[in-house]
Length: 230
Image (cartoon, rainbow, N blue to C red; front, side, top):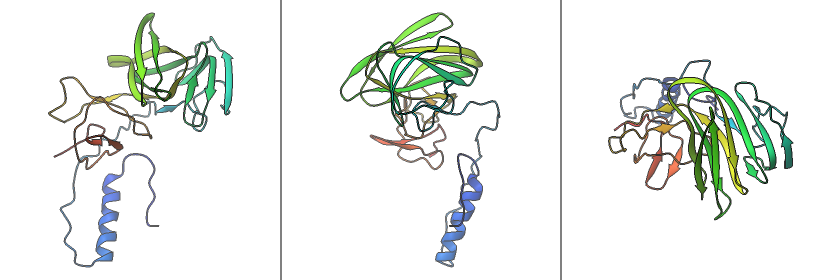
């Protein structure tokens, strides 16, 4: 073991160590020129990280540690910023919450863009009803988990979001922020959202390679954080 790194950033150091290992294994080997790409990892300490909803990583749940099984909660209070609360009945899994009767999740945050990663159970379909600042919108949910926008704006602002899910939907996480995608083939205005560890689908990316920012795969290409380069 030569080096351990957690999370984003430190790309120049990681690349340098990889190059060193290659030359140690094959002295004199000709390596490509170092990438020398800018490190655009956010450094704002006020940024909210991905907020997982399953029992394994639900540190932001206001009700304390989540345990596997059925949870019935009546938590009408607005949670503190950067946390979420639950009401109704849920089945708690390791990675996700499955909605049952009257299931709702309320998130308090300060962000420009907020997405909920949610999908159907098997071939099941359903709806997610989102209420922000008294305005309600409805999203159709079906199939594999995907991100759905619940807050969208031009500047970061405080928001309290309540999402009510019809029974049988799997909610995995909230993600935050939006990064412009450099792919010229993307539809105008269609950018990437922040991503999660499971590599859920994104609105658009047809790149077949992503030298930096690789996070997963999808049919026809790789997923990226908008850092794709040719």
